[in-house]
Length: 346
Image 1 (cartoon, helix red, strand yellow):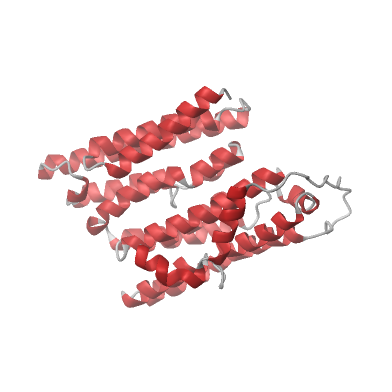
Image 2 (cartoon, helix red, strand yellow):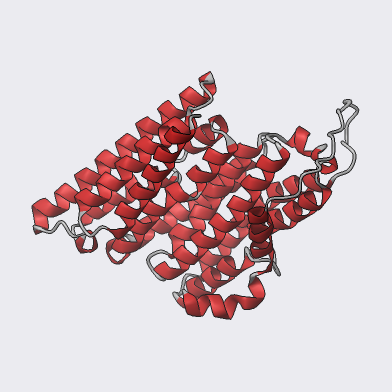
């Protein structure tokens, strides 16, 4: 892609995100969401492959429908209350429609069907943007409207998302699809706590974005898209593969890695809110996603493929690993001991 065009699209993405997260008026928030959607479409379809075009079309249709629902929700609220302020969403019907719209934008169950397909059709760098930056504006809107949302609806969406995200990722061989279902599962953890402690949702999102960025950038460096090629990628940059193993286990939420911190805090907060059954259920359901993370980790560090197919061994890369990946990997693995400091900042 032309560097000037790339610059325009990335700048538009940052502009759209900034407009949405800094606005008080519903129309400005909607404008930011639209700028974001239009800026990411060329980045999804830049390879001109039919699968990429299909992914861009699916993304456009679902996001356009979700944006229309956001607008409809805010208009209904303004009709009944005379308020266009985002934090004044007091009408129950508007709140219900907004929850559905944001669930569609994020890819929460039952509006999740578009996300794995779009991620599978996108390049790895665009997949990283879709999994991290594109999730921030909808989560910000949920954060701002959290006092007036329906707790039982969000809890149901969260538990379903964690269940289906883990369940549907079990049988995948394409790494981008596995990461898409991992994202749906993590969104479940964020949605269940947003009403009771919105700051925990943001902390979970930041740490999830950190770990996902590490995984996507590492995969982009070793040029791996499916499990069978991941098995032979250990010859390229062995040290990077070893760190990818730890990052995947951190995404799974195993102690003593960074990914354990948000899960620990969320379970603690749910228990304080007398929601021990929900905490138990969501913890058990996260074991499903732990299985496919372990599968990925196994394929990452394996030295010989466990079948008779002849694989071409990769050449070891001479170039050193990117500094950004080194910093992100370190943070993805080692932030748990400084959790008291992180909590004071958040």
